[in-house]
Image 1 (tube, rainbow, N blue to C red):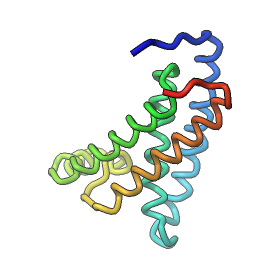
Image 2 (image 1 turned 90 degrees about the vertical axis):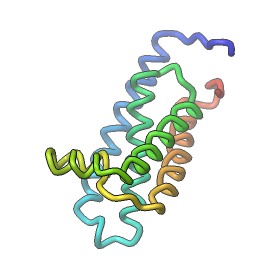
Image 3 (image 1 turned 30 degrees about the horizontal axis):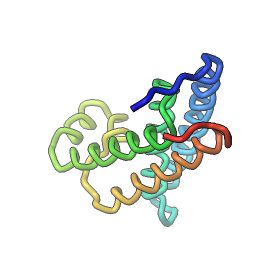
Image 4 (image 1 turned 30 degrees about the vertical axis):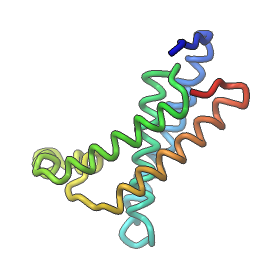
Length: 138
């Protein structure tokens, strides 16, 4: 597969946009956490935001990766975390350190798999939009 070379300023700009988007997603996620149980679809929205946050982190770490790759990695990470919830490991981690619950969850919910896919699609769309129309696809 041929590699794509980009100017360092393009990579820096992608990192900056990913960091800014991550900040926005975290603020939205914290706000959602306060009302999640009282809002229809709140849990699904949280799963979608989690996936977009992972995509932002991946983009910040690997700014040369295309939107499709970044979204695919974020979606895959979400599915793996959800499947890990079939084991006691995430519950044990959350019991030892409460905030781990927000990252790892504590119980498997098949409906969350839909949230990861929707989050990946949203992340892909947002990244394509922020990259601009001239950005190469992957």
